[in-house]
Length: 128
Image (tube, one colour):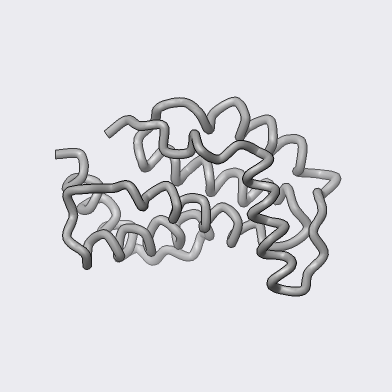
């Protein structure tokens, strides 16, 4: 289902989420010299457009991999995709929880092959 999944998350919001996570983890919050501008450019060019949930997960994963911040990149983009998936309807509570968890794992790069299969099954349920 094409939707503007990430439209509510400007780059300023992404930065604020990272800053909060860093403060909570007693870590330095700041941009990286190598990836910050590349991730920002990618995010700003795409976050407002309509896309499938799979594409939204991939955008978050790519930005995480570029590492725009010194710390908590995975947590930042995983938090964003979790927030974006709060509006999903049509799944029971267990499937909704599973989908949100799997999306986070996909963004972080820790999803198992079983989770990837489950993700495809759940996408089929929400696209119907």
